Image (tube, rainbow, N blue to C red; front, side, top):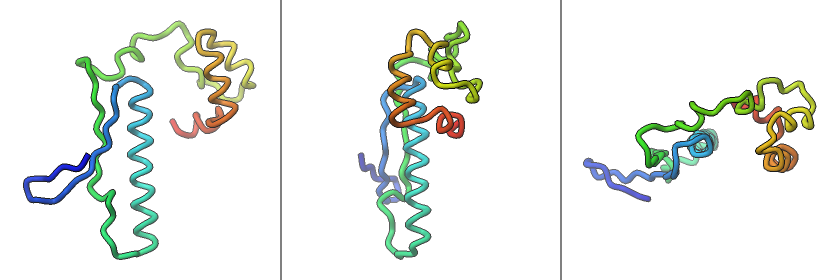
Length: 119
């Protein structure tokens, strides 16, 4: 959305729905992408003001606390990346409820090394 500040300058906002693990991951990724775009534009020295300047990333959470489920999860399965040296099948075997979803994610888009580096 585009909002006007009190001083009349327009600001863009990226809204993330949900303050759980995925929402916070998405918000961080969005903020990183905005910063990368701004950095690339500054390096090219186009002299034009970017539409991303002053862009805010806002997380909308319906409860009183973000990351509430992450805080209460456990059983040794919530941190699947505690040892990235393990082979992928071994990592996935430690996560029985999300094995199928992680297999697709880790083999198609985001490797265990990518995950470890991101955090």
